[in-house]
Image (tube, rainbow, N blue to C red):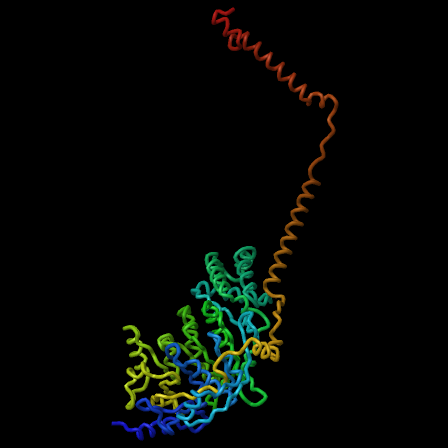
Length: 523
């Protein structure tokens, strides 16, 4: 039977690392904290990605806050996706209360209320630094995957990008893309087909509908200039701590496709712009995605494959990604397998489906000599979690029931006045405040169509004038012609002709009322 000393030895050997690390909690056995069984977080493996899971109210968000604080203290920049709107408080110092005192006494750690360097970001018109990207930066392949297009439609999108590149027409926003799409399927179709091949009208119609669907989720505010520079996410504050960028996306729960679009764009941009780093002592940036199921909720199979590929490769660029969600099953299995750090808070078993989920969750963790994992998963207290991660050699550490340290920053949101103060002092807000509308595909094609329309009108007018010049002038009629042409003369002629005709027919006995009367005996 495993003893407390066996447990202490396992934790100390499994959670002692050569490089820099931070204490995030204390190991527990049989429901009680074990002194000196410190659970540490090694920064060297934080680019191996991770998962924070658990039912509502079990402490996931506070765990995310603790990890972000530890990274910032180690001069590692952090990006937090704040979907519920409860992470802004990390910019203010926390408050020491009785519950925190009790927990710290058990863990054996000191508490110093601390405010962290924070930059507020936004995808919409909320207060903060506006994040945008151009359609050109997405490229045809990524844009096609977001729109969920088939191979034929993807080929047409590539044609649009190629046509715009060849004609020096920048695709900055969706207005540029839709204008070009309409042009190649109408006015410009004949000329473009000569150089680029056949264009299917049904395909252009389908793509346009897909773009409109994306626009209905607010994508117009995201696509455009000035484009956000990802280097601005990797800043170090004046006191040497990593900047914590809090992306306020509280309105994204009703816009999952836009959120997926942004996430894929950001990851692709980070992967494309950052150099290969190999095995470094600590990551250059760590992303935390709260309510991560929104990333996958309406993602197509192609989009999921793209995400899986980026997540596999981006670790070599020094970027770590952590998903925070209620149920581990919210994360596709192919991506879940890439997550080295797992923090599992309590799960609730109200139904048979819940019990099945708990059993599956327990099977995702290393076997333990100290716990009945499946049973304990429903009994973890608030601020407690099962933890396992990868050490420097890539080997999973022992599964530990951990009492987590409390955040040093505020466990609540900022007030409106505090947000206003933070935003007004930001240099980045001023940098990205004004929307730019440079001359791009929309303006160029609009001018081209107007010019063509003007030329067409001028040509029609010239043709009409030319016809008018060629038409012979009418000669003035003589007096006799005017008399013969008059209506009175024409009527006299018709009357005379009628009299002559009736006379002839009567003489021949073929017509007229007189003939009929004679036959009837009237005359």
